[in-house]
Length: 103
Image (cartoon, rainbow, N blue to C red; front, side, top):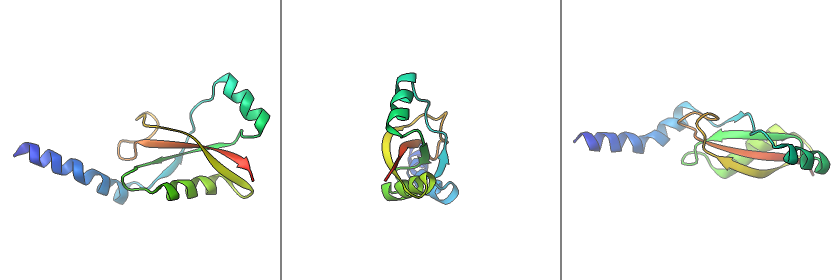
């Protein structure tokens, strides 16, 4: 019986996440020195990252948030995704990173 309660709570977790924590912008991952050189040379120094829950947030919403963060005249290009709890909270465990490129 206790196992059923735990399973039910785990199934409700994504629903609770959407109610309490919307996706938000966070700090993008550190670039290595080699990646920094490439970013400077191709003009993609500006980067944004979004914490979200893949069960409750669509890819379109994450991309729209990245577009808003990049600003006018810039297009977000996905560069990575991770699930490190040191970057995003438990209910929004995924972090998508985008490079902002001039359109």
